[in-house]
Image (cartoon, rainbow, N blue to C red; front, side, top):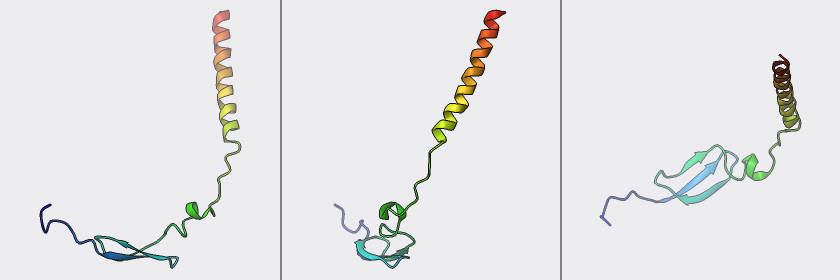
Length: 80
């Protein structure tokens, strides 16, 4: 490898808004973040599940009505 072309990769302290901090390495140095794996709702399991009940039923109802209209059109064209 060529000498002096790679950036410095020193230890860095990452600090979250919740107070959690951890050590890693970074070319950027130490910095603050708004959210981390200790406070993010997805990782903590404290997120709300969106109630999706009714979505499938509304979809089926919508397309059943469209299919019924299309079938009625077919039957009126066949009679004529």
